[in-house]
Length: 111
Image (cartoon, rainbow, N blue to C red; front, side, top):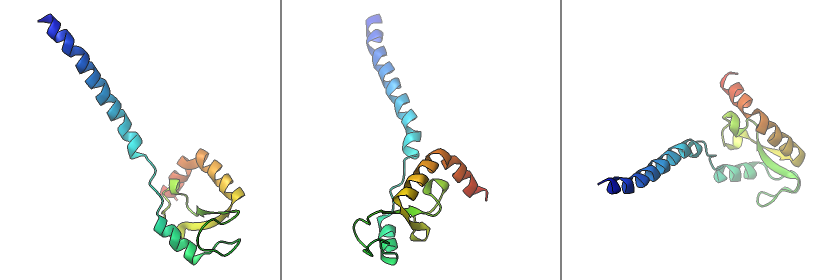
């Protein structure tokens, strides 16, 4: 009888370990980034052609589409919140947001 219970104990341990790992991963899935809306980006490009060559499709040399109110600060992924940014501006905002996203989120909640 003791041998039977000893055989099932490792399975219960493995099952509980797997369950705890799955439950630990739930907040990571909940905080995953939402994909950007491609339709809004297309609409922005139609209304605001590329500053360097005037195209509405494809790459825009030296320019990137950015956000006025960043997404991490609860900004909307809408064309009204989009703007053209130079590469230097994009890198500056990317570095600043990595450090200050909590501050931006708090400032958007309590203006």
